[in-house]
Image 1 (cartoon, protein in one colour):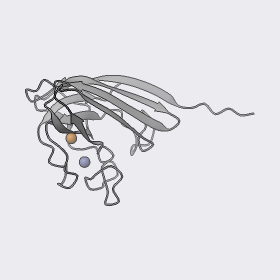
Image 2: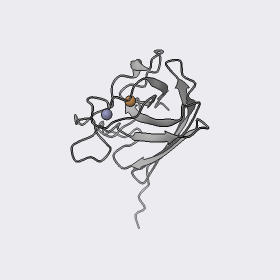
Image 3: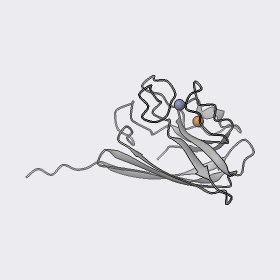
Image 4: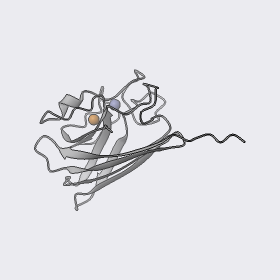
Amino acid sequence: MLVTACQKSQLEISLNSKSGSTATGFVLLNEKNNTVYLSATIRGLDAGTHAIHIHEKADCSSDDGKSSGGHWNPTFEKHGAWGSENGYHKGDIGNFEVGEDGIGRIAFNTNEWCIGCEDATKNILGKAIIVHQGADDFVSQPSGAAGTRISCAGILE
Ligand SMILES: [Cu+2]
Ligand SMILES: [Zn+2]
């Protein structure tokens, strides 16, 4: 009997505040059976709706987070809501809600990503997680008009 080894890797990365915000947290990324599971907890947010995306470079060095580049879009689609038939970036995770406690929690999973595989249209290593001050409208190009980048984490091992 042949037992196929399942690919498995896990990383935990820190979100650091940007653009003068107080938003910090961590993101756990875990790959199991060709699915990547993302879970994040972020504190110090303003109440309301915030966007979270994968941007194209694991470079959080600039104060405004713009060093991370635009949305990660390896398949050259339009910006949109995840799963939209009109197209979406592989980094278009979406929006999450924050209450008066300023804490946001995100859980997301997809088989359209991998952690460190050979397929450049799936590999999220070397990219960045960005949290925005505003909400993604899923329509405005190229990035959903989500406003200032308030927290950034490079996806690095
Ligand atoms: Cu973004
Ligand atoms: Zn996008």
